[in-house]
Picture 1 (cartoon, helix red, strand yellow):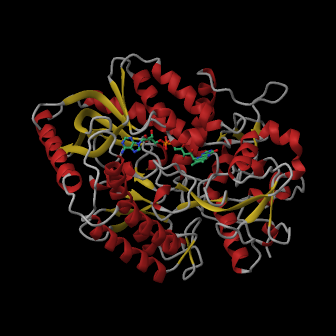
Picture 2 (tube, rainbow, N blue to C red; picture 1 turned 90 degrees about the horizontal axis):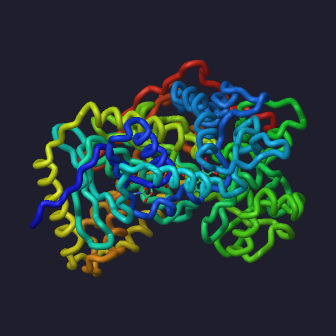
Picture 3 (tube, rainbow, N blue to C red; picture 1 turned 30 degrees about the horizontal axis):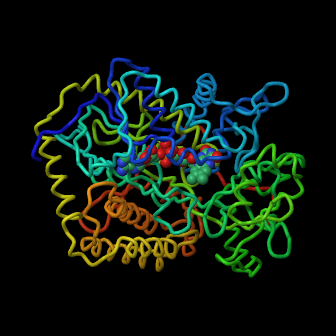
Amino acid sequence: MAQKQYSKHDVLVIGGGGAGLRAAIAIAETNPSLSVAMVSKVYPMRSHTVAAEGGAAAVINDNDSLDNHCMDTIAGGDWLPDQDAVELFVREAKDEMVQLEHWGCPWSREPDGRIAVRPFGGMTIERTWFAADKTGFHMLHTLFQTFLKHDKVTSYNEWFATTLLVEDGRCQGVAALELQSGRIEIIAANAVILCTGGAGRVFPFTTNGAIKTGDGMALAYRAGVPLKDMEFVQYHPTGLPGTGILITEATRGEGGIMTNKDGYRYLQDYDLGTPLDVTDPDHPVKKSMELGPRDRLSQAFVKELERGRTIPGQYGDVVHLDIRHLGEKKIDEKIPFVRELVTKYVGIDPVYTPIPVRPVVHYMMGGIDTNNYGATSLPGLFAAGETACVSINGANRLGSNSLTELLVFGARVGKAAAQFAMDHPKLDLTAIEKQGEDEQERIARDFIRKGKGTERVATLRKEMQATMEAGAGIYRSETGLIETCNKLAELRERFSDVLIEDRTLTFNTELTSALELDFMIDVALAIAHSALARTESRGSHQRTDHPERNDEQFLNHSLAFQSDGAPRVDYKDVVITRWPPGERVYGRKK
Ligand SMILES: Cc1cc2nc3c(=O)[nH]c(=O)nc-3n(C[C@H](O)[C@H](O)[C@H](O)COP(=O)(O)OP(=O)(O)OC[C@H]3O[C@@H](n4cnc5c(N)ncnc54)[C@H](O)[C@@H]3O)c2cc1C
């Protein structure tokens, strides 16, 4: 580097979504004199959190209890969530939601002024708070405006973190690419928090925005931190064919039903594994089988497809999500965005015509292994939000737990990282400056100057996504997974010959796509190898060659470590406090 270039902060947050903003606010509240920096590859309001529609779960009414929320989360996650984490999550959820209202979030209300809650998949009692069907938008706005009130925050918007700087066994900052200038700069910090979101883009058909490429997971993995439970990938049962745009679960929460080609509510034929064997015929679970957990609903689609009972369409087979019986007034009041999306992107009005839907990759249950304060095994490195795995989501996340997770664990990680920064004030700036120079050289050598490469980013990405869907999709088997692992190893190899034709420095999107693909291949390898090693079926991980859950061998979290060649997969115990493993039973079974 010709000239010394670095900036220094007490705590650095990477990611401006719900988790990152909540963490940054918590740091400022813990100690207003700490300098906080936020690096985000897009402007914070463009983070994926903004796309969340349905709602955020927290116990609020008298018919509910913290234990109920725990039980739904644990059984929904097929006994893989850590129960101590779930207990503190449900306990701290309500205060966070009320806090958000005090900061300005317009939660929808009942006519008498109480907070309105809607039913959600896998939740046996209505506890999902919402702001119409733009919950994520309102939450992110509220957090962003609160974040901006603090004086000692610096934003690095449209900066792309490329590597973590680790010295003396401690994370001391990041190297980041300023997208506008193409310059790599070092941002030193006493503590770093990764809030970089999920990785749905490793699959071809996803609800996830184009920026969800698992960058933070790969950054931590490369620094020696394991990725936990990566085999658990959530398919949402109702994506719009072609675009993958999500039709929120709130649509079913408000009474939408799912039908096959014969107009038959096919879910009644499947075991949906809802935790309570509900006897009350008017109970929402009993009345609406559409509110079973997402993994079971997505698996039921595949079975219907195999039985020839789905509807062929331009983008593959679909089933119908029918909301016509709700009537125009309720649709416009409760789920107006659904009507807007379907009208715009499918060209039909769901008030009069059923919506074509199919399962779509939606959420990563797995992620960076952290403790309940968001700390990783690398001192000074923390993580929260979808990129992290605490774990409260286990083998299958319940809809609406994730937005609340951003708040609860965003706040926790912010406090913990602030404390760490205060306790560890010294940094080795000379050493990390040298690392920054090396990083600049690496990008120039391996990407920009290369020019001689033959492999196109788009081709490699397409092949990666295709093999992930083929081998690591809704149903998996040893043969398919081995093929996927081999294909990914081949892609990793071919990536070293990647071609970047665009040599300009300003907003070089070919370069950022290549950096993202590099991260995604690591994430894909961790998913496929963890899935191969788990020879049982649990939650979203269904092995056709091992159809049963095997608690004796696999009531534990997988940990994928980067190593030379294939990732090394190890395990650690699940924390069980009060709920011994049981069956995911549902009243209806055929
Ligand atoms: C369409 C959709 C609907 C959803 N609906 C719901 C719902 O109703 N209820 C619910 O509970 N959950 C829902 N979810 C899930 C939930 O919204 C997400 O899990 C959550 O918002 C993720 O938040 P996050 O803060 O972890 O990350 P994100 O909001 O994804 O933010 C990630 C941030 O990291 C930054 N970043 C990433 N990589 C880099 C890098 N290399 N350098 C710099 N910055 C980087 C990005 O710029 C961004 O600011 C939904 C998800 C989707 C996709």
